[in-house]
Image 1 (tube, rainbow, N blue to C red):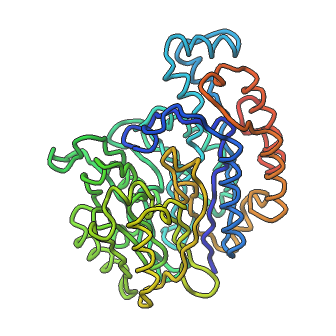
Image 2: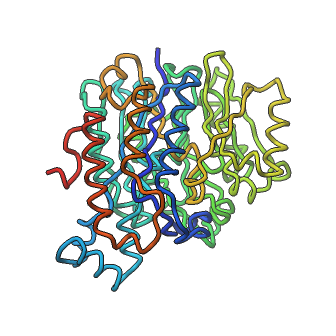
Image 3: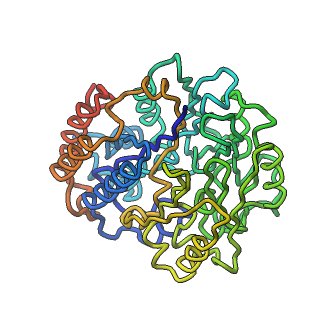
Amino acid sequence: MATEVNFDGLVGLTHNYGGLALGNTASIKNKLILSKPRQAALQGLDKMKFCHDLGLAQAVLPPHSRPNLNFLKQLGFTGSTEQILQQAEKESPALLVTSYSASAMWTANAATVSPSADTEDEKVHVTPANLISNLHRSLETPMTTKILNAIFHDRHYFHHHTPLPLQANYSDEGAANHGRLCLDYDSPGVELFVYGKHSLDEARALPRHFPARQTLDASEAIARLHLLQPSKTIFAHQHPRAIDQGVFHNDVLAVTNKSVIFYHENAYLQHDAVMDALQHALAPTELIRICVSNEQVPLADAVSSYLFNSQLVSINDGTMALIAPQEVADNRHTQAFVKQLLANNAQPIRHVHYVNCRQSMKNGGGPACLRLRVVLTKEEQAAINQCVLFTNDLYEKLFTWINKHYREKICYDDLLDPLLVEENYRALDELTQLLDLGCIYDFQQ
């Protein structure tokens, strides 16, 4: 038996709207508006509890320590914490905001994970994403690597790879551009890697307005590192038109679960060929395609509502459910599509549940962005750090921890407050004890 465990990132204490992500329309639109870290963290925690109560396996990943003072020191800012922050604000406000980014909350970008059923050595393979397409996200990789090693620590079951080279040809955005199809979670599966560019791309295959982030070169390297069968590995080209309309990761337009792929017709270049390749690799299991046309849901509505950034999950009654952002219910086109979907008894999605993650959505991250999917056998699940597995008791502890430590609001001027740094240190030190993670942060060394 194997189970899909969702590892959700706790929203960080410095959650703010820096507007740092080019190509992410929500991030740019909401640049420097007032953020509500406590509300954001509680919204994320409530989503975890909802999934847990639905019978899903749920776990937690801790936030990163922010501001990243080592980053600012590396760029030549010196002195006390207060002096470093003031210098950065004076000389480059963008660097100050970058150092405070809480974007590690979107753990779909933390890594690419292949389950033991797919790998030649029958181990779970983990490659942290290098995230070099955006400066603020590239700062996450060293800490993410530490966290994943601390949780998946048993080398008998888990094989950890170093992040790919920090070079443009190997730009890697993690599981936000990766999906898996299978009969059951413990069955050998087909792994789908989606890329936006590769080193031999011609201009016609590239987006014109926003940069493509994931490269084919990176996806191919991860497939080799993870010892995947070539016949069970598919590489699909993300549609450049979609990237230009704000689909910076493929999980904004597609999601998979078991033998189902739920996607927009503009998710892939030559999507019929992609589906044929998936069906061939998945055979004799039938690929269940739920394709949404641009007429049903215009691309702009798919991006603004994050319909496809819903979590597509299997529940105990044998059916599937979508855990969708509230914005899907608020949008005329997506609301109409959901009604049409549920009326179709020939497909397995029988439930749609709406969750409130508006604080995350304003920065361009829906329910699926907030979780990293990891398929684990019973033995593998028993071999991880048990303190990160979600329980009602952990929920109560995290609820108390958030209300104790998180500020209600943060504006730009708060980023100059050295007390905010001290508050982060105290809170994260307490959290590492709560989750039994040891001394993983630099300030604890």
